[in-house]
Length: 444
Ligand code: PLP
Image (cartoon, rainbow, N blue to C red; front, side, top):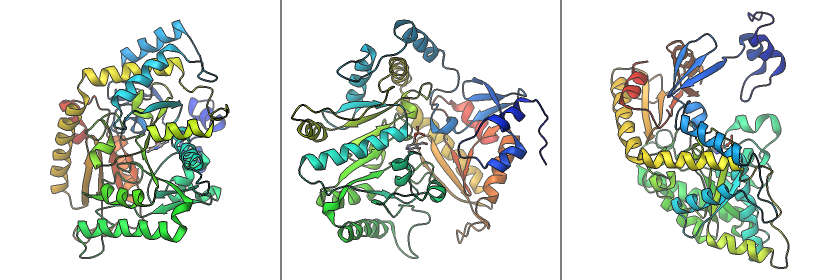
């Protein structure tokens, strides 16, 4: 029985609005949590209740919920040019500025920026570019993509196929053929009894190589990974993981794609998550933090060999047959440029490290007083706290997810928005959080 009053906003939401990543029947009974206003790291619901948004929305609003400079940047951009596109040699002027700025920040030498509007579009774009890269070199059989268990790369069909989370596949008969998944480098649950980290890493690299050899190296185009898995449980890979994995991939001519959609722009305590984990990608996808999600904009940075392959592929005057209406949108570009200026002015990387250490220390202190915290992990301002029935044996609760859901409900009561991932609690606050904000988060 629904408890939602008739003719209310809640009732209209239930009637007219289908929600992402939500159980439809439960939603019809419970109704929505309607947010109406933001102020710094806090948001307010329609009843006026204030919440500390410890997930930065969906790992995205790095500058919080009321950055006036982004509002002004948007207004000025709309005054100049409400829309223009990037097809057929055209471009908004501000989009060139953003491309130049991203290339200056890029760890990939001599990169170019390609724009899209979502993280899913950016990760899928990298797949198409990887296909072009190999086809231009005559390796047209290289089509398969290796992703990882517990990875997340988006919701469109190819992006979802690259996800390593069953909920992204179950209803749709995914993954598509040719999208493979190798082991997740989870240092908490992955090692076998008695296996130390170097041997765990060596086993992961060996498993990847066995998969490549079994499939045929000449059928594999690229490997994609988040530097630190976000939605899969904030998995920080063990020391040496990416160098070991990349050695295998390079041996077999397979491109390395970094999904920096969450990890980019300071989140992990470096400008790029790749730098935090020692990954050296050929291409990288970014979104979310690029505009603090004040506008749907994403980008791919692609290195010189990919650019050359695209020129070669179209050497007889054909076009790169890809693009979105809103690729490089001038308002999104202006907002992203202003976002990047603010990161520079606030010196985002040292700030994230300092606040991250404060948050880590606080979480560890809570863990020390708790009987159900098995693991506190993370980097920069991206953490997970894993709740377990027995920290000594690491045995989880049964059924998985019940304690996480209860924690989520209690946190909401306390005015704190977190995200349960099974029984791991994710914390990914806006990067503007200060010491007072961290202390408030811990207290709630
Ligand atoms: N990649 C990662 C690592 C993500 O976390 C997400 C979204 O959460 C995506 C890609 C997809 O981005 P979008 O939802 O903008 O398509």
